[in-house]
Amino acid sequence: MSSNLNYTQTGDYLLPNLTLNQPRKPLGKYGRLRRTYLMNHRPVLYNTMLLSGSLYPHLMEVEQTAESQMQQTMKQLLKQNPAPDKEQNQMAWVQHMNSLKAQAEELVLTELI
Image (tube, rainbow, N blue to C red; front, side, top):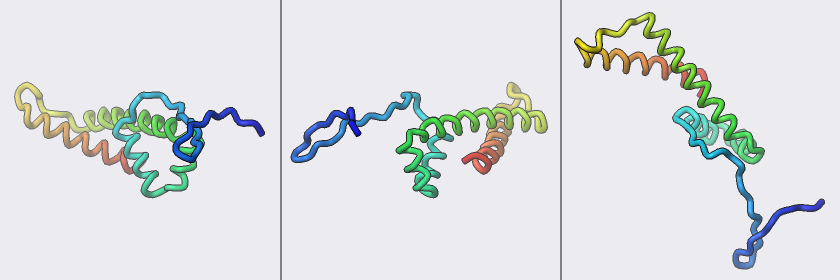
């Protein structure tokens, strides 16, 4: 078996020059939450995915799915519970929208993360 690895000598040791081929797009909130969940509750799965290179694509997929589900859930909740007029009562509008966002986020977190 031949290996095409390059090594760097550090003290008495030869260490392989390894790089991860991952896109540089940073993870969003839901991708980071999923990564933390996997690290704390499913360490074997986390390490397997990390070593096989499938962790970052999985986290990006979870991020995109969670974002789209958040948007859809917010639209549905806004249809069911219309917000007060933003121009006349800004604080009530902000309070209402924050409440809807918290409800949608709770649904997404329990289902996906």
